[in-house]
Amino acid sequence: MSTIDYSTLGNLRLAAMIENEVRAILADQASIRNSGALLFAGDVAGIGSKVMRMRYANWGAATPFATATDGGEVSEATLTPSTVDITVGRSALRYDISDLAAMTGLGMDIDPFSLAQKMAMSAEARINGIITATFAAASNSVGTSGVDMSVDDFYDAMFQLESESNNGDFYCILHPQQLSDLRDSLRSESNNALAFSPATEDMLAIKGQGFAGRFGGVDIFKSSYVTEAAGDKIGAMMSRGGIAYAVGTPRPLAGAGVEIRPAGTPVVIGFQRDESKGLTEVVGHLYCGAAITEDARIVKIVTDA
Image (cartoon, helix red, strand yellow):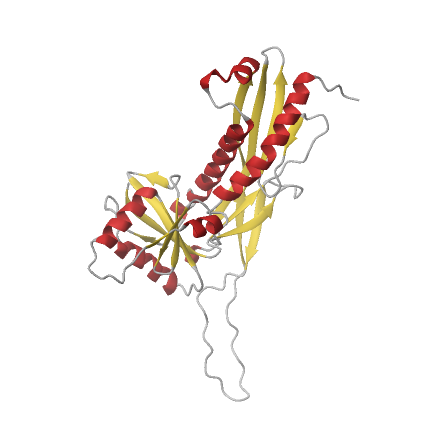
């Protein structure tokens, strides 16, 4: 039977207080993952590989019915099943909280809520970065390097998706600078029909804090983690399932110490006591990967940073 001393009791109490906060904050921040634009490919735990292989039909452009003679044989339409590999990697974040800092505060907000908030927001930011880093690999592209984003770029992206027979809802993920340039472009238009519908409090409650609003029937999300390359920002517009992501959930190990696993999140936070230094190490772990599923479902938007 393990001994529960003062420090362990403190860690258990800290873990219990943080768990609910992490779950709530992640649910609020996970706007891109919850947007409908992404497919969740699954969890690599127990599959024997860090690579999640996702299979899809690869229908391509819609094949129309053709005239057929009565009693004549119908030619077979081509259907090429495809796969996409999603490699899950490890990301981590560690805070060391000394006993003296915890007792005195040292002028800082050292409390369970603040710690949970930092961990959760950092985790979601990392997931957003992993997702948006895939945009650069898209073959279809609109926008001009070194030129601010415009409403024409937005419509060009919609046209490319529609030309590939994409149906249903479209989603756009932009850097805040791209979003600002798009709004400036809209304000310069004389046609009042080009109206941007900004997010309301009710929409934010449903779609998450990254939701910026709607334009042209497209849900727009903003992320400061959109990739920058050669002085340009690389946002994207996609139909549902243009990108898929996978996670990994480590299995609990006997004797691993105090840890929390907030339900419904890909985050594991462990607590480890270092008595020789009089501090508690708080380490967050995240296992996640993302990849483009079908190239026809996504258009990257390359504009000046």
